[in-house]
Length: 213
Image (cartoon, rainbow, N blue to C red; front, side, top):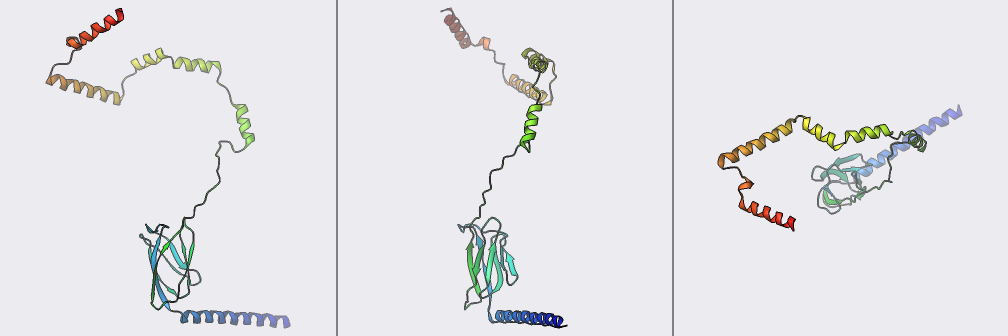
């Protein structure tokens, strides 16, 4: 029975101490003035604002986020510790000072938090044993496969295949546009014939003389 009473007294004393601490904290909050905290969260060079940054008071459970331009505004108490957090930047803590005015404005430049990861090599084989098994099981092409490859890539065979293969859509379109261009050229003047060009004949005779020398 004595043990039970001690437990009851311990629970009651803990309850009253918790209530007293909450009451004292509320009294302290009532003694502090409310400040409208506003500002802009920007990059380190203060050129552009950061959208989506979190500004909050951990102990008070109050906070907000920045808009598209990095602007924010929310009420705080004097002496509050405000935390500014955003992905890719280091956290920053700000203490709200005691002021004669009911507003506090500042620009908060954030420092980038760059994390360098170790190099990761991606291989098709998860372990060295599986890699060795794959190398040993690899089959080198035999002479028959090499002969078939050489026959399929023979220049004469490829030329014959290109000659008998019908044209596709793009080739038909190119042929049509070429014929259309020739038609319009013939409509506005005679077609050029290099055999009627005297300068071309002069160059031809010069080339023959050079070959005879």
